[in-house]
Image 1 (tube, rainbow, N blue to C red):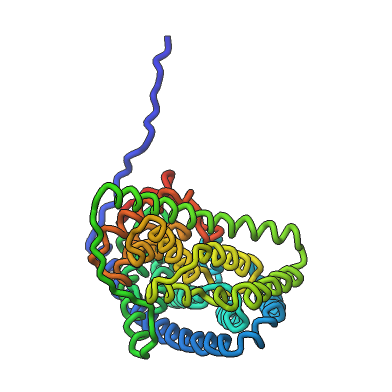
Image 2 (cartoon, rainbow, N blue to C red; image 1 turned 135 degrees about the vertical axis):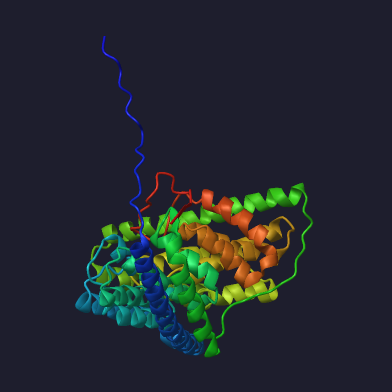
Length: 431
């Protein structure tokens, strides 16, 4: 009778002996990464400031001449697609080109995408498309980090990843004034499932330096400090849980519907020029005849309305949800972050009004949690909420964002993001 042989389920490998040369080389590389991250942070911080100033001018121009500009959104769409088709050959309905490039392991980051995304974002905003603004900054930051790593030619397998993360952290931190959230956002997106400790320091330097230099130029960023001390009782906890689940479902549904609608539109309207023009015409009609300009652009007006005046319509989050997905799926440029903030804030305010809860508190929780659910990130939205609304509310952001993260269906607006762990909702610390 043969004995059964039970094979081990895992192997324990001995780590190679690390001598003094290894440690010295590691220190030298760390210093180089930090210096490069500082340079990236300064460049991206200045870029963010200039980019945001231009967007503010463009937004003011659209609001003043809205009925003269918005009808031509379809024409702007045709121009955007022509430019990408002529100079890039990239798929316009892709959400974040830099992330897809990382996961496809391209050897070259195409620098010509940067001016195309910037120009596409400006055209989308000028003519009333419902989209965010972060794509251009993220594309620029990631590209700069990747390019700098190749220029250094270091014999370090993590060089490109480290500096790309630094570039993304710089872009996020400079745009929104939330450097800690920026650090974890970049790490969670490019390293889903675990955190590489060695990347933290370069990402921190890039995010803080970018935030500092973008603030020097006096660019206004959204912050809202408020005082709300709710009564902690069973009723409050139950409603908070209901809201957290809703935030997770809505954020996950946004990511899922974006992917689904992109495929459906391509199948129903195979001609990309017809597709982008037709969707642009539809959004123009909604902007002029239905919403009277309320739902055009990034959605920052909805956010200001919620937090400054506590004014929100019950259908605000639904309309922004639909228009943003339509705009981005058709191929218009910009991003989804600020629309996601607007969706979350308006949804949170609606939940608060229905259950007689503090409107501003629930709007702030939705602001962060829906963003986290749609991007499939956990630590980033927690710190985002704390940095914008105050660290005294961090326990609330932690609880709500964790629940929303669990109920988002493991969806992400990054269309080719790949999880690297068997359990996608488990964060591991990796040295």
